[in-house]
Length: 337
Image (cartoon, rainbow, N blue to C red; front, side):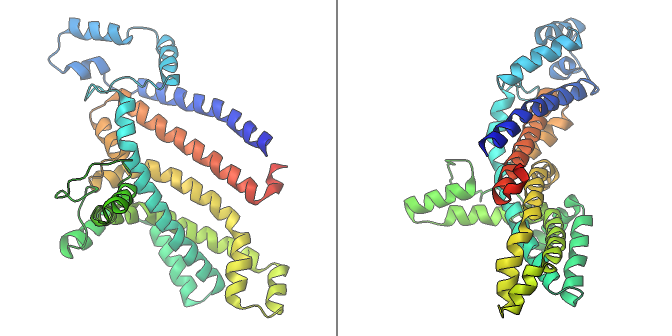
């Protein structure tokens, strides 16, 4: 097992190097001069040329790439053209919000997706099966930004049940500890006995998590159904039923356990996609995470911020896939061979 993990870790090196290379050269093809954007339209050509020289933009592209690679390996993504703050500092300040939103979204999609898939498979060709799969088809087809706007219109504007945006009530004086607000709310509960911070954070995260988790929910439901149907046709399931075991025991103890392997892969992949897909969700719900920050950087053509943000998301996605592969081999040792 250790040899397998080391091998996969070594394979991460060329993958991450490829990500860095692709991001750098794609951003180099983007329109606009970073020096001109940083100084503004009224800057003199001399000032622009001086700043280009200071940033090394007057060097050949290959030289710029090698310098950039050196800085990136030291986690130095440069300074944001918009705020003049280090990009890595801004990423670290906003990434917990995106991670928290993605975790809650994947929990919602996993719980309800697996439940829908199991019910659909155990009641194949019934009204429940058709209804669940129709719902899954609608969920996959529904644009995230459209669903987010509908949720705000119905539950925030018309019913006034949830806030339209933000992470915490504006009237609460809150000093984050870990910057994961749900976790911080629990910490404050254990310290003070008050649940107001946790409940406020939960109240604010529900709608954006539902919007972000709808597509993964639909995909997990369909994969769970397909995997369950394949397992339910196996001989050992017929044997379990012939022994007189309750259908609930057969479904949840024997079938689901063996049908869960493909679902794990999908959950890991969808969690990675949530990090990238959070851009529109965070913008619509005014969620102060990495996605909204990236959206703002794209509008401002903030090249260092875009490079750093995209690279971090891509690397996290690769690491999540590695973690899923390792977990897969723990559940099914045959894969190692």
